[in-house]
Image (cartoon, rainbow, N blue to C red; front, side, top):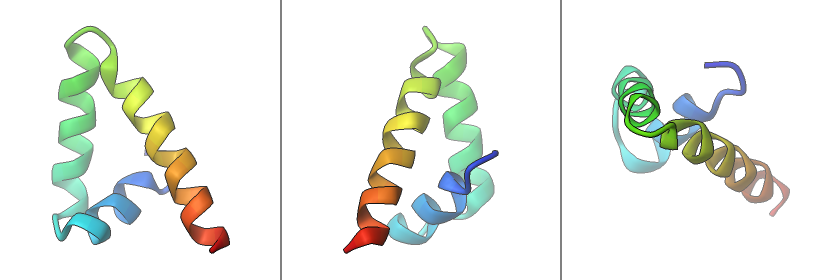
Length: 51
């Protein structure tokens, strides 16, 4: 995706980046939750990098 969240989250939970992307797409298709989950993950990524 755009902000590097999939790669960061994949490394954190020991999953492939492509699997994380597929999960975001599936969540997006079901009620648009994927966009919200992606933005929240992006926020966590930024906050974790400041520590």
